[in-house]
Amino acid sequence: MSHSTPNGKEIRDTIIIGSGPAGLTAAIYTARGNLKPLVIEGYAAGGQLMTTTEVENFPGFKDGIMGPDLMMEFRAQAERFGAEFITKDVTQTDLSGDVKKVWVDDELYLAHTVIISTGASANYLGLENEQRLIGRGVSVCATCDGFFFGGKTVAVIGGGDSAMEEATFLTKFAQKVYIIHRREGFRASAIMLERAKANPKIELMVNKVALDVLGDEKVTGLLLKDTQTGDTSKLDIDGLFLAIGHTPNTKLFNGQLKTDDQGYILTSTDKTNVTATSIPGVFACGDVQDHHYQQAVTAAGSGCAAALDAEHYLEALHN
Ligand code: NAP
Figure 1 (cartoon, protein in one colour):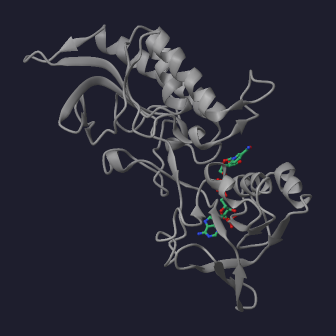
Figure 2 (cartoon, protein in one colour; figure 1 turned 180 degrees about the vertical axis):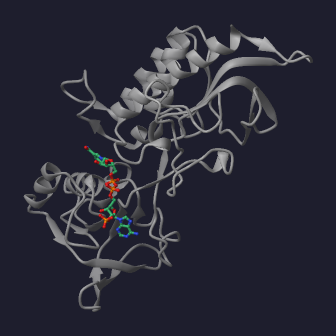
């Protein structure tokens, strides 16, 4: 049901910010619930799966599916039920009142509910030469940039599943892949760690931290420090891939919503309203509120919950 302000501006039932698996699942459900969602999908529409190759663990695709193809299917399904899309970034929000305000540049959109699904972005180490060498050998996306390292030597920093996955993927191109981790224990799941260890092109280096990435025009090496001995050493590499986790994309909502100490949006512990945030009418789903599972299928599941939670909120509001 759509309403309007006294000066005739439309108040939508729901605006969805973000368009990864969480946002697009919320769009499918709210569209089918006749809430006519407006999805502000962002310039980087589709989220992190757009920079993934084959997704092997999304249920229903027994032979796997390419990440971008999966997201196109999600989007087409939401469109089929009437979801509207704006392919721009939200620039400002005011979530405080009963009517939520969302700006895209100078254009203001109003809604009774907002579903936040802005995801998370890859972290950098903060090394002196890191930003300067992005696109010149430094990358946070092996699936995007691995192709450029045919026959080369690269390093992946991190000890989680992403590091294992990226390193294994990079062996398709590179002749040698180092995994550099700051301690001996790995966060990665046993199966992915074992797969990496079994790969003859991969060498694991533990108890090492990067002090800087070296190179003028392009990456030529990595300056390392051994955390046990304090010794420094130089490793010759042509590419550096960072797989050290993510930061939730919450800048747009700074100070408005309760977050945990890492910045992830806090959602309700009420099992019948799991995506509710600290502001009534504002719901959060996907990686922006989940630093633990971070899977396409869990994000999609929480997007479904956000749509149902928003629907219940609107029912109570309109009756
Ligand atoms: P993660 O599990 O948080 O691992 C991040 C790794 O980076 C950790 O080993 C951490 O070291 C290291 N790290 C963090 N900051 C660092 C720093 N400043 N310097 C050096 N090392 C640093 O992140 P992730 O690997 O991206 O995985 C996130 C989630 O996605 C997980 O739930 C994972 O299972 C999932 N995932 C699943 C798949 C799959 O199943 N196909 C693939 C990728 C990711 P410490 O261990 O010492 O903290």
